[in-house]
Structure formats: C-alpha cells, structure tokens
Picture 1 (cartoon, rainbow, N blue to C red):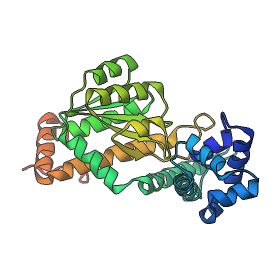
Picture 2: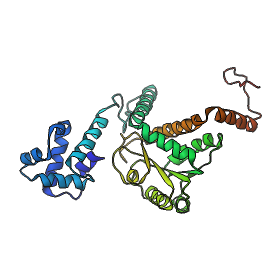
Picture 3: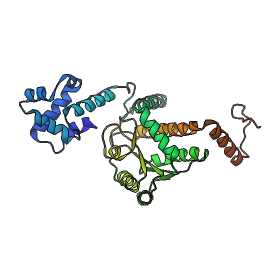
Length: 294
C-alpha cells in the first residue's frame, strides 16, 4: 500500500524522505495541493516531488495523489468495533471473545463488499464461467477454503482444481491453455510462489484472476482481473489471518453464485439432481432439514 511505502521509505534520498513525511502528515489536505505548492513549502523543485511519485509507480503527482486519497478514504472507513489485528484482549471472557469475533466477521464482509468493483467482478465471473478448467492457487491456508468452491462448482458441472504445492502449481501454469483460468490468492500480492504461477499462466496464454490486498502490488499488476480482500491486517503482527480467510470464502461464494445465476434454472435442477443421486441415504427427521421428494 502507498501508506506503507511512504512509512518505510526504502531507497529514498533525504529529500524524498522529507516529501514522503509531508504526504503522510498532509493526508486529505493533499486534495487542494499541487506538486508546485508542495515543492515551494519544502524548498525543493516540483520535479523532485514528481520523481518520488514515479518511484512509487505513478506517471506523476496527480495520479499518485488520486490513488493516495482513495487509499486514505478506505483506511479511515469501517472497522469501528474491533481491531483487525488484535480483535480481543487477554482479559476478555469467552462470551466477549465470541462477540468480538462475530463483529470482526461482519465488518470484514462489509469491508470486502465495499472493495468489490462491480465491473471487475463481472469480468472475473465471465472468465471463470467460460473456462475449460479453473485452477485455484494459494500457498497458504486459503487453499483448504477453496475446496468448498470446488465442491459447489462441481455440482453444477464446472471443473475446478485447487493447487497449493509450488512445484505442481508451476507445472500446471506452464502447461496452461488459453481457455483456462488461474485464480491466484495472495494477501500481500508479493508471494514468490503466487507470482511464479501467475507469470507462467499469463505467458502460456491463460487468464489470471487475483484475490489480493487493496493497493498496488506485483500480483495485481500481473492479473487480468483483481478482486480485493479486506486489507486491515499486518503480515505478521496479528492474532490470526481472519480477514483473508473471511474475504476468500465470501468472494469465492459470490463467484460461484454468479456463475450459477448465468443459467439459473438449469444449474439448480442439475445441482439438486446430482446431489440427490449421490446422497441417497442422507435424510433427517428434523422438518427444517427434510427435503421434499418428487
């Protein structure tokens, strides 16, 4: 994220550090400031301000400012009830912990939906719906969460393969076809395994859908479509990877639901038929659970 880059100031010259700190201190007031006015306040040249923006990956100051202000708006919104990194304290009892984790779930869902761009979601759904095969890669625990996506998609006749071993995933992506899609999950967007898979898949002609953090990162730059997960947690200093897991489950369920809805009647009939033919002995006396038998 831009804020993180401005704080870390990796490779910055002394004057660039000064400009970076000015950006951090100015916050939303940058909206009314130009590169020339900032340069005058810091006794430097406008080109120096522009050079820092280019170092951060932007064409110039205006592009940087717009993205930076968008990021500040995101970081200042939502998550008012809980701290995503430390959602509970050691003094909390079990009921309090349960309530706080529940609040974290609700806020993470809201946060993820706020970050979900409608056009990007439609493109991702269309790519996945039209794909001969869909591969989901994650080097982390999200690969296990994706197994439920595999099951749901299989019941409507869609083939999804979860890959988590770096070598096998690399071989799959190296041999990818143009009618295949790779859904690559990485919170930081800088995981080496994820980047290798995405790079090989793109070079082979396949499409890449990224599920990654908000802001610029290498995976997002490489992907055909990017869907953002809730981006409130530190990489290490947190009590658990709650946000990425919740966002992953939500986004994969949304994608599945949208694919199903493309041919709703046919997919519903198929899902019920194939599920019933497999689960022939599954039943319950609970009237809420009991299915009608035609």
